[in-house]
Amino acid sequence: MKLADMQVTQFCDVLASDAPAPGGGSTAALEGALGAALTAMVCGLTTVGKSREKYAEYQEFVLASQKKALDLKARFVDVMDRDTEAFNVVSAAFGMPKATDEEKTARSAAIQKGLEGCTRTPFEMMELAAETLELTAELLGNDSAASDLGVSALSMRAAIQGAWLNVLINIGSLKNKELAEDYRKKGEALLAKALPLADQIYQNVLSQM
Image (cartoon, rainbow, N blue to C red; front, side, top):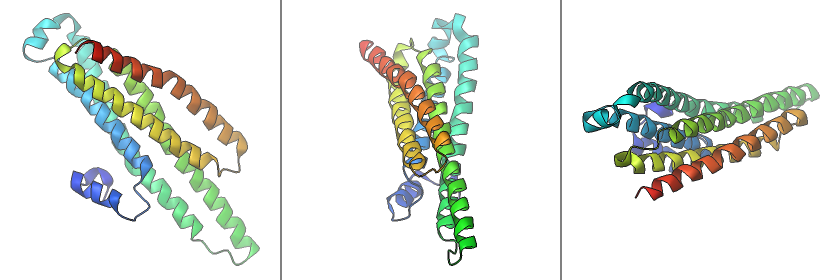
């Protein structure tokens, strides 16, 4: 069963078990999906009732933002399952035979290919989290839903930092040092941009309380 199809209690039970996956990567993706969903919710709340009247001039922008937030949520959910699938590929590679030199070479190549996949998915989460934070920052202003945007920012912070830990643990085992360094530089650049933005959103929300 896909993680996305599980009930909340099922997902938590599997996560709490001794199964190595899902783990921190898929959890980071779920955090991201929840944050994007909150951002979409705030957009929805801004297009109904008195809020629709109050923010009438922004309706086109808010509707476009809602569509984008829903797309980001779906992409987070997709990468949540792909992250666990990538881990399973590496696990299978470690189980390959290694009795001969040929088998050892094939096993090593499979492990490295799997590790690249395990690095790619959390890095994708980082990109999605950064994009969602930018979208969320543009929506500050609906006082009645400020706390929801604050929680979205906190979820995105957890998502991008959690994903970064998963990038780091995998690039440490990559033999392709050029690829590893590329991921490190790009990841650090995303963090340098996203974390201050998450903090800014949170502080702005606090100021509205």
